[in-house]
Image (cartoon, rainbow, N blue to C red; front, side, top):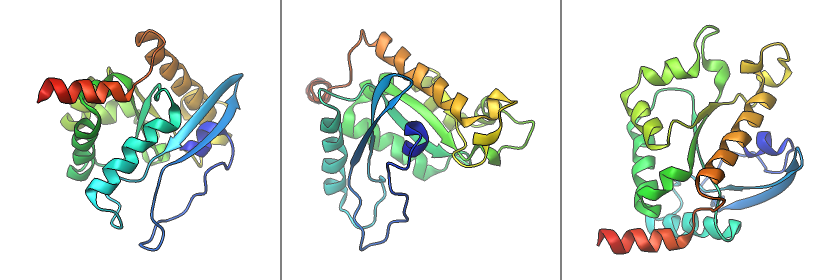
Length: 196
């Protein structure tokens, strides 16, 4: 997804094994006159890391975007929303606070797996878990196909360049709603103090 956003091969795409521990990686680029930094975090269920180590690495990722990230992209494959994906949402809230969802955008990859006449809003409406997550994220959701849709110039819905443009506009709207601000570690501390 990071490569699709940056329109380059900035991130190395690989399958992780136990001998390749995952850590955060930041890459930057200029997209339509905007300077953008994408930070790829380790997966929440990396088998080679303890949960505490993983939590610290994911929290460290926020410092890659000092003073903090403008948006969090929750990236899922467009398939069934399982208990494991639901657990990721729980962990995000645990690690960052419920405030984080004001800065979240849901992004589905592998949009080609939707049948030709199915739109992602119909797909989401059929799943209560996804509908609930979408509500938490202020209704912000995009679908991108990183492989096949890039050549489809006739149908804007099935053109990943158009989808990324829409995603960037949504991120800009998140920034506007935050008064130009970003998510900061102070929000984590404040939320932990308020909740106990």
